[in-house]
Length: 189
Image (cartoon, rainbow, N blue to C red; front, top):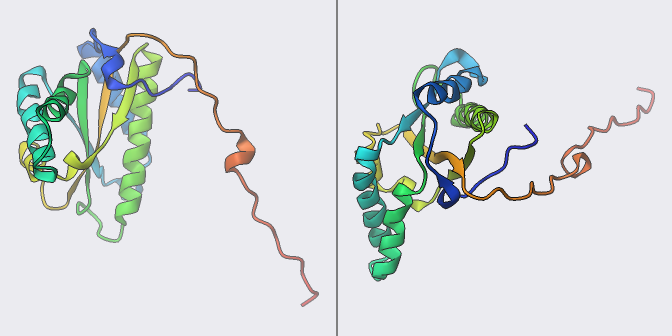
């Protein structure tokens, strides 16, 4: 687990996971906590044949946000669809099942599923990364992935063979992120 690190998608090359490895990676997601067993998340694999359509969605989303974007910026937006051998969109369903289970719990469950996917990819020798951005909110992306009104495009996951390994980054120390709840002294009442 400590060896997992983010590898930028442009540094992830072929080969990506084969069919059996992809199955292992995706099956790891099923171990995530899931209050109410809603299965409020899903992974949508983007095959090579769909990359051109996704590239156009990325370009259109940029132009909708910035009509003055340069051709180079539009080309860079398109290129993001081709960066890694395996590309998946993570979608969270904010409306399925029990309405008392808040969206935040559904997103936490998705985050746990994502971490399991990333850890399995690392265990199999691949690099991986999460990417997000304003294109996740674009109507073109919602249409391409047939997202329902209650669906939230959370992030993309990229997986592939690492071009150049980087040194593992320094991790925060436990004292940087762990506190202990202090018990107030009793006044005898």
